[in-house]
Image (cartoon, one colour):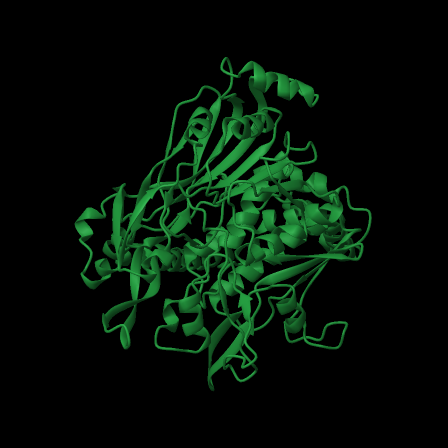
Length: 587
């Protein structure tokens, strides 16, 4: 064998042929790319749903990622992960998929920096401080991408929130959602038919300026309409999702019958329910209030479907700060920012519905699930590890913040405050619908159904989660506009801490840009989107961290194995090679 190789390379054509084979092999590999994904969760493989969606492209799909510049390691990792994912997209459809990385300071087609256009589109920026040799430099970055197809555009958020740094857990979650974020945007651009959403208004639901951000969030991608169940004979067939937001009046049996039969025909429910009357406005006249039941009469409906929203209040040591009076007189009050345990910051549970970041809530309740055949239940939002619940009637007092909370009572972890229910639901009115109800239903051309098709619903035990507050308008100098007026802030944001952050006040660090809007969009999208795309959302990247105590204990041992042993083997190999050469060539 050795003699054959020697004769081949000794000929004049041997080396050129070897070079030619090498070049052809590399050229063939570039035209027929292949890779092996050996990770358990298939981290480097796109899903079947993504491949099928990209096959539907009929025109160029342009992706512009605004992650270019000097970033800390966390953002560089996010940049590399995005580049890697888009390269996989391009391999699947090289004729249509095009992508580039730009700085937000680059000029857009209108001659202005891209940052201006991104702000108008609603992109959140991060004021990042980068350490350089000559000192620190402040840099505004936009962890977003813009996807354009046939003249339409969608904004993709790569990292929700406004944190100046990325923790390993947050980065892992953002990476797991990258494929879904892009696929969701592409799906909206390809399929222009908008699902129908009905916002119920017949039971005291908010219809004022507090729903502004909710309407803005849904109107672009969905056919949003109002629906008064007390006046309509049924939920129209064009409605795919029925939205109940903070109802204040009781539901009659006929209204529940309409909701029930909507679910039976495969309709989706998204409910934000306050079972108790507990509002901050109640503290305007006195420092305490009693939280009492609203009497919505929805308990039997939700119980039949497999869940119960409890008449309690969830308290959590991980909570929002609020501005309240702690002393002084009515004429000269003494106010401070204090943690308010009744405003928990919930987090996403390890389930099908992923929403990075905290979710801001107001006087939220706990939820229990009930065993119902054929129904699967998944917690969606949960409390921290230091939480508790108090039963009603509950006395809520502002004076609670004047003393340090008894942490020993906050001993419950992961209390569910939102659940996802999936399956074939039994009707609440099976074997109990009256003849009058059945006749009225038949008169509108409908037939009674006792079992639903496979469908889903999400129950959230807080009606304020998707509502927004308002702050005064400010002029260019940062002062309140003398002409007056107000502007809406994002749903769930705390207006008091936001004003502190805008004015760079002493409590500015209390402001937290909660991800309530992202949760709403994720919940709606999960319920009404293609089920195959839901599998992309459920993709998880396991964070395999080293055991800290073991690393510290065995540090020197592994340094020897990983650094010393390779050097020893290399030296031993060199010594053996020199010994062999001396013996082989010494005459």
